[in-house]
Amino acid sequence: MIATLLGTGTAIPSARRGSPGAFVAGDRFGILIDPGSGSGGRMARAGISPLAITTILVSHFHLDHVGDLAPILFALRNPRFDAERRWPRIVGPRGMGTFYAQLRALFRGWLPEPGRDFELCESTGEAVRCAGFRLRAFPVVHTENSVAYRIEDDSSATICWSGDTETCDGIVEAARDADLLLLECSFPRGKGVKGHLDPDGVLEIVRAARPRRTVLMHFYPECDEVNLREQLEGETAASISIGADLEEYRVSRPL
Image (cartoon, rainbow, N blue to C red):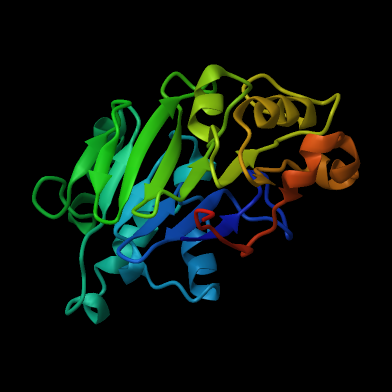
């Protein structure tokens, strides 16, 4: 699998970091995760066509995580895609169906219809088998319906996407022994906010879950005003990287 970080920032406009999002490409699938504002344009910069999307995952309904959901689906309606269009499946937490119905009420027929054009699923916590990968959602502590996702391809390589979370059992279980953990770190040490992580929370999760590699994301501007690397201390920190927009990470299961 190849994971591309489409955005490592938040809702705060930044010249350096876009709103959250990632694209995970495998042999038979392309998963767009949390299409935050500007995700479509950054996909284009990374050379990823909207036609490559087979599944869209939503971790929760804050605007910085869903801002480009409607624009990307609207783009797929363009006649240039008629011959090859396959509407992606959309997977989200509890309330995804209601949220999407409200989007369609706003934009009427400009968005595809679930059940007719594509499959819409609300995650239940059970592992779901998809073409080329297995998916499981884990409840995390942020909003009342936030989830983290664990993606496992046919070779058993695993990627975990934390969404937004504070330290909790759900993110530890989602990230356990993952080959790549894409983990939020919203604030530097001493400036933490409930529902989010700082370096201390990051280190606690990494020590408990023991992923092979961790890449941090979802940085508020405060994180770019300090040396965040220096706040990640100890042996565990060697496996942790500071993410950047449009960085790619190749993920495979060690032999």
